[in-house]
Length: 420
Ligand code: LLP
Image 1 (tube, rainbow, N blue to C red):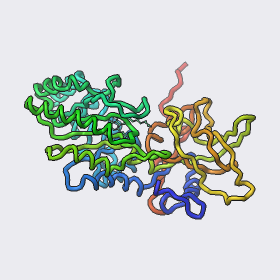
Image 2: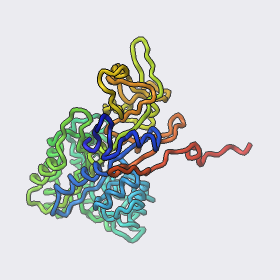
Image 3: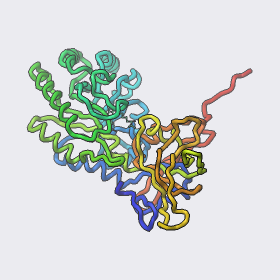
Image 4: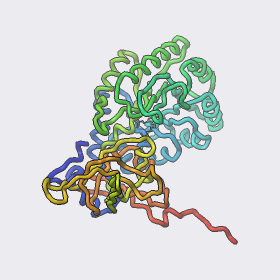
């Protein structure tokens, strides 16, 4: 988290003390570093320099309009999985022709809208979806550009809930059916085959599973070529991991070098759909300690953020570093450390942000939950009728509110009483 560092015992985001952000905007608040997002995106773009490839940010990781807008300004493409995500991209200044549409179930209305704005490609996940896209395109007198998400049956070696490339997962078409389904697509009038894609899982910390998947896909691309079907682009999905604690995942540069070596001189364009590796370490969640509670066997720090704000620890047992905004001078009376479970106010035992953390804490301290830029706000909810957090972007020494904290009125908007 290079854009987040202590200076004079105060945690900074770029050139702004985070305590200043907490004071100005309150807590809980997500804070993103513009610099960190740009650096992470450019690590991909620079590694592909001189080639006609696309880096399509997977917006499910972080879909705030300001985040999408700074990526669009750098020329990013986008990976979307719903019409809502597509509309966000367009609203944020992204180009439709740099959008790929993923997901196991695209509804007719979504397909229609994507055809109307002219996206780059539909990543199709089943035969039924192929037929649907062909029909909808026919109704509009259009030809839909398509790719099939092929499930290469490789083990990504990651958490079972975020592993997607095995036979038993719901995603993609089985590799053994792919030739037949591509041939079926080639016979349809309102689709045009342009690509092949895969996405084998998320938070991968090794290059090997990506390479295994590529081997299988490249063999399939050769088989298709022999059958007279040529593929213009290979989309390798997202999945590159980040460092949450002590993981040492490959950098985008190392990953892309390995991909380019494997592609060799094949005339294939590449598409990547990174989410986490662009934004995870570009964001923190600020939360204030409300109460300290010392039970016989446990110390609890009850904070004002909860599982509704950050679901990853509860859902995936994810570990996120939790650090204070101000470091206490060693030896000072209030610097004594205890082992705390950091928990929220939600009425669930699963409502924790971290367990057994050695921290010196007082009520009123503000903490930063690190690596929270990906799958943080986007997975948040209103459980327990809690308003969702504010989002702030720091650029150098300025903080910009990029999403206002929700109000109670926002929460009940659309709810109605019965007439009698
Ligand atoms: N492309 C497709 C088709 C995907 O399904 C995903 C993520 C991505 C790209 C982006 O993957 P990334 O680069 O972020 O690994 N909520 C979970 C992660 C779920 C990922 C779902 N698919 C978490 O918080 O760990």
